[in-house]
Length: 258
Ligand SMILES: [Zn+2]
View 1 (cartoon, rainbow, N blue to C red):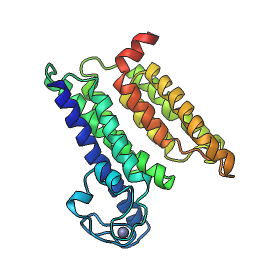
View 2 (cartoon, protein in one colour; view 1 turned 135 degrees about the vertical axis):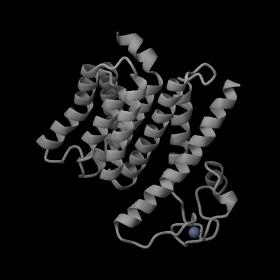
View 3 (cartoon, rainbow, N blue to C red; view 1 turned 90 degrees about the vertical axis):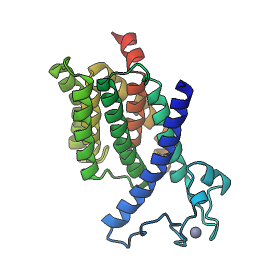
View 4 (cartoon, protein in one colour; view 1 turned 135 degrees about the horizontal axis):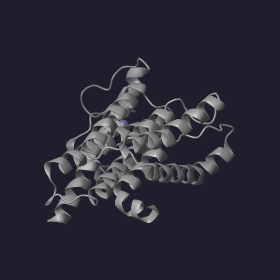
C-alpha cells in the first residue's frame, strides 16, 4: 500500500513540475509585456499546440528526445529537470510521512508543506531560468511558511527557535546582499531564506540547510563562475534543494546533532 502512495506522489510531482515550468515561462512573457502563449501548451518556437501524448511529464520529453515533433527545435533541459525535480521532491518528502496512521493535524502539516515545496520549486525554476526571484511569489512563500509553522508546531511553538532559524537563513543572506550591494547574492535570496527559516523553525536544521546549499552551489556553480566574468551565484535552486533534504530527513538530522 505504501508503495502505491509513493508512486502517486512521484506522478503528482512530475505533473506539477511540468505545470510549474510552463507557468514560469508564462509569467516571464507576461512580465516582459510579450504576447501570452494562449490557454493550451504550445511549442515555444513554432507555437504548435501540443497533443495529449506530447504533454505526459517525463515520458514525452524522453520519447521526443527533448525536441518538438514539428519544428525539431530543442525543448531544453528545463522542462525535464523541473518534472524530475518536483517528482523527486514529492517522493523524498513523502517517505517522511505515514498516511495510514496520520492524524488530521499531521495531514494538514503534510499538505501545507507540499504547497510550500511547490511555491519554492516554482521560485527555483524561475531563478534557474532567468536569475531572478519574483517578489509576489516570495511573499506567497512566506505566507505558506507561516501556515506550515502553525500546523507543525501546534501546541509546542518555540518563538526563539523560529527567530534563530529565520535569522540564520534570512539574516545572513540579507547581510551578504547589503555588504556586496547585490553583487554576491540577489535581492530575493534573503526573503527565500527567511521563508525556509520560518518553515523549518529549527536553528540546527537552518544551519544544515545553509551548509548544504553553499556546498551544492559551490560544487555546481564553480565551473560556470570560473568560465564567465559574472560572479553572482543564484542561490535559489540550491536553498530549495537543501530545504527539501532537510525537511524530509528532519528527524534523522536532528537526532544526529541534538
Ligand atoms: Zn516547434
